[in-house]
Amino acid sequence: MIMRKKAPVNYIKYPIYARPFTLTEKFAITFKIMPIKCNICGHITFIDVTNDNFRENCICRNCHSFNRQRQIAFVLCNSITNKRRNKDLTEFCNTTNLSVFNTETSGTVHNFLSRMKDYTCSEYFGENHISGELVNNRMHQDLMSLSFNDERFDLVISTDVFEHISDPYLAHKEIYRVLRRGGRHIFTIPFYQTDFSDEVRASIDINKEIHYYHEPLYHIDPLRKEGILVFNIFSIEMLTKLSNLGFRTNMYHLYSPYYGILGSNGLVFEAIKEK
Image (cartoon, rainbow, N blue to C red; front, side, top):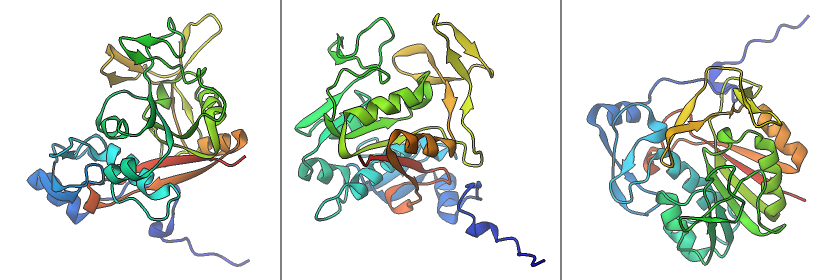
C-alpha cells in the first residue's frame, strides 16, 4: 500500500481555515487607520479601523464604504466582461451599460449604482405588501415572488440578504428567472467556511408559524428595531443547489490591503445564468 503524505495546510483551498492576522492587519488594528485606494469612490484615502472584525469595518473616509461593500465592488469591477476592467465602482457606473437590480435602497454601493440609467432597487417591507408596491416611495419586492418580467436584468446584487429569506432557493430561482442569459447575481451571505451543509436555523410552515431549530439569531436592520431573523447560514452545499437551478457559481476569496479588503473571510459569490 502506498501511503500518501498529508498535504500542507497552506495548499488546502477548502475548508477555508481561519489564519493569523497578517502584518498589515496587525498594523491596521494597532494604529486604527490605514491608507488605501478605495475601489468604490476611486480616491486614495484612509480607512478607520475600529476593531478586528474586519468584515463590517474599515470605513473609507471619503465615501464611507466598509470592507464588505468594497468586496462587492471588486467583483463587480473585475467580473463583468468589458474591453477593459473597471478600476473602481465610479468608473463602472460611468462606462457600463447594464440593467441592474439591487436588493437595497440605501448604502454606499446603492448611492453609486443609482447613477446608472437602468437601475432598479427595492426593500422588503413585510408579507402584507405585494411585490412592486411602493412603500414610502420605495419599492417593495419579495425575492421569493418578484414582480419583474422574465429576463429583465443583466445584473442582480444582494448583500447579506438571503440568510433572512425563509426559502432562499426559491428566491434564487426567482433571481434566475429575471436574469438574462449570461446575467449575474453577485452577492454576499454569512458562510460557514469549514462546513459542508447549510444550517437551517428556522423555517415557516404553511400556517405562517415560525419553527426554531436553534436559538433565534437576529441581525441589525435599519427598518426594524427588533432586527431581522436569520433563517439560514450557508456552506459549500449552496453551490450544488445553485447548480441544480442552472447557475454556474464562482466563489471569490478576497484579500487586498491596497483596496482596504482585509480579513480571512472575504467571500463574494457570483452566480451566472448559463442557459
